[in-house]
Length: 338
Image (cartoon, rainbow, N blue to C red):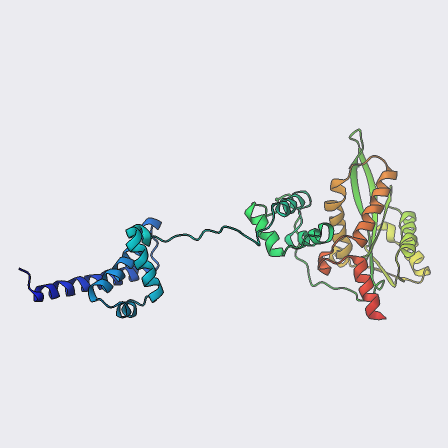
């Protein structure tokens, strides 16, 4: 026959064993030892059983919760689950999300991926396009997460990257500083032959408003013709024209500009970054206009270039202006001046 003294000794031994087991489990948790998920789950279940068994032996839930630093709500939740399902009830249950009210609609995801695939835009500009042209407002984070989820967050190696530039500058007054340059382009006609043309570009440093013209040669005559077109096209007076030292921008061009009451200045040799805004706009032309263009004849080319110029000035969100268009910036500057 077992005496009360022997039962008390047995209980004390069991309690000490339970506490030692608890300390062993806690040590594993605190040390953050990497374990197989099944082993980790087994220790969690053992941890809960130790607490429940300790409370049963001493007959005091409040004291058990204090000693093991377990909230009473958790204790009774474990107790009820263990009584209903045994050890199975103590397994960690993953929460089931029955609905996602803020989940991005599938049609928006498809649109994001389609724009990215065709135009290789970054998350910020992609968001601006969705807002301006589709009336869909999504955050830059949502766009980026969508691209990551579909393994499209990195541009292909063939896509051009923005180089690291020196400090940017921007003239505040429209027309104070206009950069002019030409872009050599090669197109294919319907027979597959090469068609070489020259796109002359003028861009206002303050508003990024541009004027574009296509010529079959780059000469003094065409450069002068283009400047006359720019003066007529821009909705403000031009103070300074800035070019590189190409032969088409030499004496005849220089004095023609000066005679029209504008200054003509050259950038330093081998310093294209000083005309960086027009250089960057030429890259945009290549990425968003010429790579999508099918050449038929010069009349069609000039018509499409005119449409592209209008789109760039009035409708295309500009990265430097956080999604605003050049003419929206011009309007804001004129309002501020007045």
